[in-house]
Amino acid sequence: MADCRKRKIEVVGGGDESKGREETHTFRKVIGNEPGDDNGSASESLLSGFKTIAVLRDSAREKNIFIHGKIDDQEAVVILEKTPIREESLPEIFKDSRLKLEMKNDIYSTYQLQPPPHLNEIKTTVVCPATEKHVKKYLRQETFLLEESGEDYLSITLPFIQSQSFSVQWVYNILEKKAEADRIVHEDPDPKVGFVLLPDFKWDQKQLDDLYLIAIVHRRDIKSLRDLTSEHIPLLSNIRKGGQEVIQKRYSVPATKLRVYLHYQPSYYHLHVHFTSLSYDAPGCGVERAHLLSDVIQNLEADPKYYRSRCLSFLVRADDGLLRKFKDAGRV
Ligand code: M7G
Image (cartoon, rainbow, N blue to C red; front, top):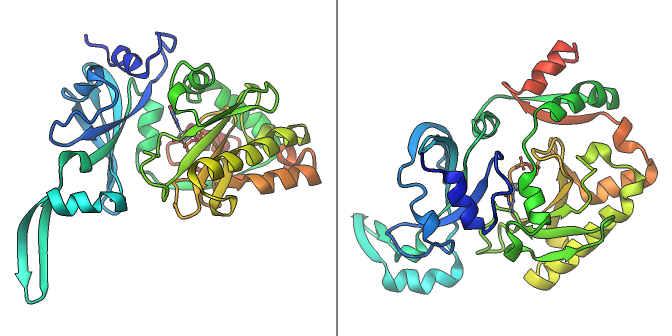
């Protein structure tokens, strides 16, 4: 049986440390067999034998499709997404594309434009081997809003996430420079207030309109917003200041153009902060999931145990085990 995990570890340049864990990787696949894949020949044929089981979700407006399938014998989720058209590639698009007329009527005409292959990329994300939880994460489903008190967290949510949450091996790989080391934009190595800042894998780094970076803390003892107390204010302030400064310096995007927030619930229970462009309607930046970092800091300044005691609302999908646990406890 061919092993997509092994091939992908070759791609990220690491050893076999993450055996038994899910692997996630992002490729830029080029239509038309151009050698545009930076990750080497090992990954080029990864999807050639992909067998589709089901389309989990797709969107004509967002121009993406989430597919559940198999790579050899392993469960996989593949996300294909058309990337934005960049202004700087316009001269090449106009000069080197083939135009095929579809219809003409008076002053109106429509065409099929076939640009050079390197301007026709599809951002491709592969999760393999994917767990059932990954398949559910990407499946379009009805959602419900739950209200969780501090006690609910301790008696219902915490035992649930301890028993079944996504592996954070990919996070440890980043912190230990076993994966994505060349993508790190900034690191503060301090064990208490330090963090690593790097592009989120949702961002292909080709344009700033959808800028998306994540700051991952070095500390491994903070699962989420719920664990934060005033003790963590220096850490959070350091991330806000360091992240904003670096993004200003490197991408010329000022703090006033950034949305800096934490998710509750996150998918991965190792504290991290999202930095997205204000102009980008990033998935999960709505009020039912995103908590602005500045608000979090202020709330902790006003009440050191704010996030231990307050009710926090969050979304769950219809078949989420956590919804069942809240129902069993008579909380819904
Ligand atoms: P989250 O709030 O825990 O979950 O955020 P979400 O995915 O439901 O938003 C985790 C963030 O880390 C997301 O923005 C992911 O796109 C990003 N992310 C996840 N993985 C597995 C990776 C990865 O392997 N590398 C990078 N760079 N980002 C990732």
